[in-house]
Amino acid sequence: MRFIAKLLCLLLLLSSLTGSAQQNVSTQIEQKATAILPRLVEWRRYLHEHPELSNREVKTGEYVAAHLKALGLEVQTGVAKTGVVAILRGGKPGPVVALRADMDALPVQERVNIPFKSTVTADYLGQSVPVMHACGHDSHVAMLMGTAEVLAGMKKEVPGTVKFFFQPAEEGPPGDEEGGAPLMVKEGVMDNPKVDAVFGMHIESDIEIGKFEYKSGAFMASSDWFTIKVKGKQSHGSQPWKGIDPIVVSTEIISALQTIVSRQSELTKAPVVITVGKFHSGVRPNIIPEEALLEGTIRTLDSKMQKETHERIRKVATTVAEAMGAVAEVTIDTKTLVTYNDPELVKMMLPSLETAAGKSNVTEREWVTGAEDFSFFGTKAPSFFIYFGGMPKGADKTKAPPHHTPDFYIDDSRLDVGVKGFCQLVFDYAKLKAGGDTKGNAKKGF
Image 1 (tube, helix red, strand yellow):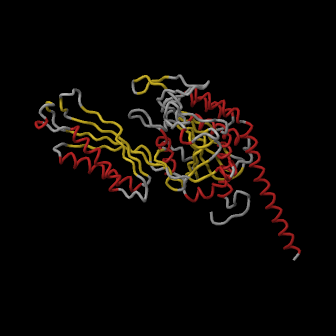
Image 2 (cartoon, helix red, strand yellow):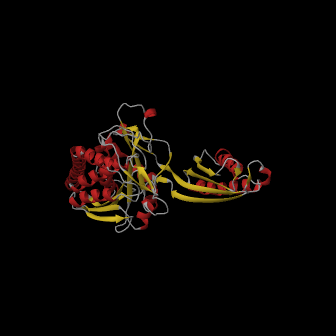
Image 3 (cartoon, rainbow, N blue to C red):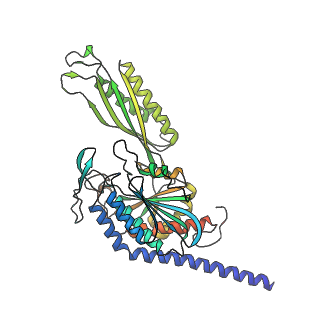
């Protein structure tokens, strides 16, 4: 009886010590992330002032690599052209966790009047364009640099291995170049060592600073780009009956494409978007041209619906054209997959975000028709992609400047919360993987 009592006391003591150790880890993360906040802001603003386009992030990669090497991490450069991958091998056994940040900027002219405003110009497909971090990738890089520094400073306590992905070309490589997450995956970043789970964050201009938003399951849409080439018969503008007008045929195709959304897609299952964003045809007002070119994008949040939408677009375009005496050729290029948050992983890791930001600052949201090539990492391991707030506290969400616009703006005063979130995910995932909860208590069924 005395033996059982002593054993129970020992188990209680061990449980208490484990819980205290876990609490101590969270305290360290909190203190270290808060301490480097000024540097996070400094890094982010430097990157904002020196943006680089997709697959051209040479200086950005060098800036990141120098920081990671100074931390003593294993660093590989030139990944997927200009990307950087770093490995931190922790002092304790555990899983392999990958954390990702994208590095590229956009061909956008900045209008925001800030001291670190971008005045950079660069070549884009033979044209000189202004360059701006109009989607917040500069903040992603800064947060992951900060996460690497915090975890490197806690190396002895870090369980398992952490892989840091600094990814180029999330916005899409120029022209026919390869790039982005698909190329990183192709080059094997999810292997050697094999990644058990991958996490990513994206700052949002219409979510208040310091807050996280997420959705379990399908979160962000797949992105397909399509072209429809309509071939008619050229004629004088005064004699349309002698030709086949590809412009008229194209307008009918554009209208018919929307019936795929409104009359053929099961929208109670998931939304579908078909947008024609470019229409080019003709050279003179009095000539009916021979060809017209339509270009657009498709957004779906279900892989089966994605395939069905492709088939319907081909059928609609070709049959409408045929009915009017023309010929339509359809090409569809998949840019990203559906960004899917593994439901079990989401459920397990929500307490980590709540520890980092506070329970009231972590909320579920609806799905998003924007797209992310982070989705390709999710084909190799369970993934969780999270939105993080960058809107000034108390600002009107409806008036927040959208991403990819000249007026895009984020408040970088709480980037430390993103760092805390990443760090908690690393430690807590390892604890859960080992069969415990985030407070250090034994847990079954993982």
